[in-house]
Amino acid sequence: MEGTQMSPEEMEQRRNMVLQMCVCPSCPSWVECGEKGGYCFPTIGKSGCITEEKGCTCPGCPATAKMGLKHTYFCTKGSEMEQSSA
Ligand code: SF4
Ligand code: SF4
Image (cartoon, rainbow, N blue to C red; front, side, top):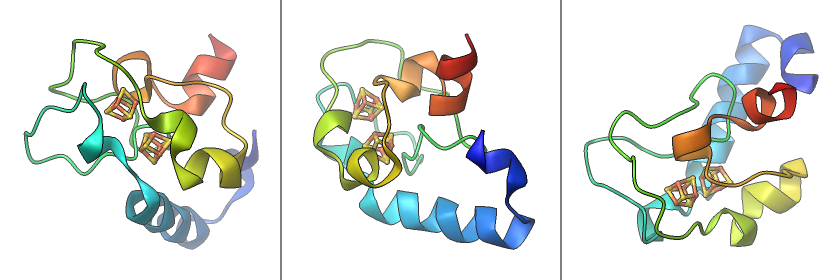
């Protein structure tokens, strides 16, 4: 997977880019608990507070287009990398 070949600096840059694009806070499943979203990203992964799947706005998120994400519900099911290897 692409994430494993990146330097720590690149990973951090990419992580910040994903967090800026993330539309999770406007999702029906969102629970406010101080998290910033970006659950699709390998070093973020599942939410510690979202457990109920009430809809997912990931398909309309710029990160989905930009990174070619194939999955949804990253907050409950894990990052793109996690779900791809499951
Ligand atoms: S794809 Fe989903 S989890 Fe990833 S940044 Fe966008 S809204 Fe957040
Ligand atoms: S990962 Fe999907 S379901 Fe979870 S909060 Fe983000 S948009 Fe909503």
